[in-house]
Length: 431
Image 1 (tube, rainbow, N blue to C red):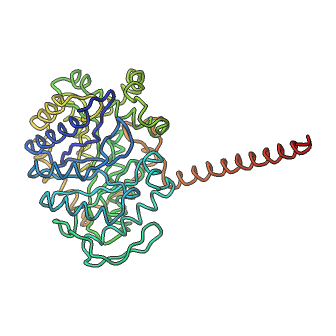
Image 2 (tube, helix red, strand yellow; image 1 turned 90 degrees about the vertical axis):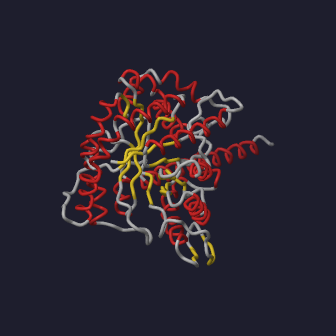
Image 3 (tube, rainbow, N blue to C red; image 1 turned 45 degrees about the horizontal axis):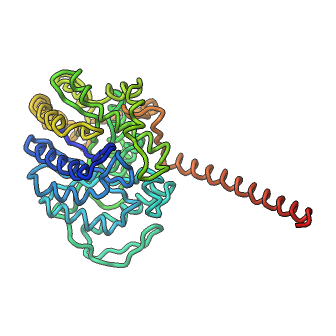
């Protein structure tokens, strides 16, 4: 099992003149520390306009800085939003980062959160999966072809040589965001690594790992010509301390992460620049849902975390991505947590990785181990999810938007009828 760290660049209000400067500088220092401690990956999101929840709108710039302060840690886009970025610009920026880092880039690709992020860029929520698929097809060949053109529904560009080319050949490994858990199955079909969240249980992990590898080996349908990246990674709320009680006390930032995720998904941003997520969060943080959120993460003493990790290791999860830059978790607590985990937890799992995990994977991919079809119907949520966090499939999203438009059409028609009646009535009164 390999280990990564994860960054949203969260910044709860109130803000000072140096708040954003400090959050970025501290994150760079944490990644530099993680590199020295032997962590494998540093993943950075792309989000737009999600105040307090994520100030990471230019991950390629941040990762470029991280590339010059580290030597071996892999630098992951987790993810680049394809509906808000032109495929040529994605290819150019990723290749440049790969050259700057000496070939350490991992390329995660995703769709974007929703109307808050997509609409200012002229992108429509219902089309985001279709745009994502076309963008992958338009993007990947640009890494290798000396002349490449695309003429599609959403993108159209003439033949050009997109430069520079990546350091890694043919290009960095491809991943897909699996914020909707069912996308894990699609990731296997597409032959991409799956970037999701922590599973509710070891049984759920086994079911989805099996579904992923079944699709990868039996139902593969890649979107373009790229090497298969057979990997499943799960993001988890994280805090490692000497005792469970100390870890839980320091891990409140994880509950802020989940609260914001739910709030923005349901309410959007009615008053940009005037909200206060931290203030809204104060009542929710003491609810039973918040306490369940704490219990869902990798939060506790080294022994508690080791015990939970063994369960996911047995389910053949490849990578665990640790999220503790969240809420108001301090720089000092983050660094101490990373150091304790690296010293007390990582060595056990590193020692077994080549012998157990990599051998099992090789046997599955070569057909020496035959997997039975997995039943995933009962496992439709991640560990941190509750009824406040709604994740729709692309088809569900299209149906919802169509129904919303139909209802809006009926309302508009009713307004026109009322307007006509009022005008008729006005003429009848001699007006």
